[in-house]
Length: 347
Ligand SMILES: Cc1cc2nc3c(=O)[nH]c(=O)nc-3n(C[C@H](O)[C@H](O)[C@H](O)COP(=O)(O)O)c2cc1C
Ligand code: SF4
Ligand code: SF4
Image (cartoon, rainbow, N blue to C red; front, side, top):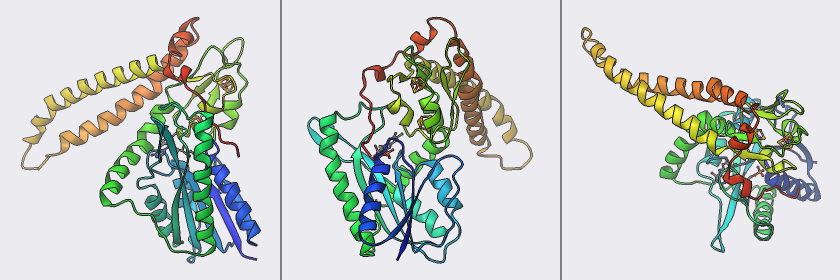
């Protein structure tokens, strides 16, 4: 019997749903399946398998950072046949279906796995309801119900192609690859961490701890707020949007006041630092004959990264402390997400 290892990450269950479907279809075709969900602390499966399948949600045109790290940690292969499924997010806009877009995510995953000598023969997309509740109001139940069969059909096609060992590799074109790589790089380095810092549990939080237990990277912690603990968010967030979508009280919001204050502080500090660097660096350009062009730009990049850290670690921690003041939590919870639906896939 041929053996298949399926490795996947999921935020809100679309990828878990797809994997369940792949598993059932492959079992029915006589394959032996081992499934591993990627989360903090999970190490790559090391057994000898005839095939591998990797599946993940597309987060800003890239695989989740934890998934990339996992793939990089896979043992070097001797050309094991491998397939990759990217699960992206569709929405309905003005009654029209707008399909998700994967950008360079599949090519990036393919490149990591090829580097490890896996024979990647199949890469494909499947589109399920968009789960980015931080940014867009999730689909209604009716819209989700209309999107699901389309995604299921794409997963079925992927599995059929896998069984038939069809060689088919998704390509988005060099221009799309370039811009989506740049966005994905910035999202992986800074965006996902910063976005995690704007989450806040509002007054309706019961302190049940479900978000803490369910976070796949364990970046949510409970403070000792009296009379009940309240969650706060660290800097390792993948921005998978699981917590905001699964809270039983719909109590997790994107804090608009915090967003304005932290970005305001950050932009102010960055302008100040840029002016200071501009003022002093030209003096250095005249030292001897050493060509120091570009030094100013380098200083600006370092200062920007440093100031981002200052904004999102110590300054954000200060605002976290303010939440203890009566009424502060109500003020900081003000958000458009209070009116948004929540999304979770039926697995
Ligand atoms: C931060 C974030 C970024 C996303 N970026 C994309 C994207 O670039 N393209 C896309 O089609 N969907 C994007 N999505 C939507 C998800 O990929 C999609 O809803 C996916 O089906 C979720 O799978 P999951 O339920 O397994 O987490 C994004 C979602 C989040 C939370
Ligand atoms: S935010 Fe929601 S899930 Fe997290 S502790 Fe509060 S009620 Fe529970
Ligand atoms: S904090 Fe929320 S969005 Fe971030 S990784 Fe954890 S569950 Fe996902």
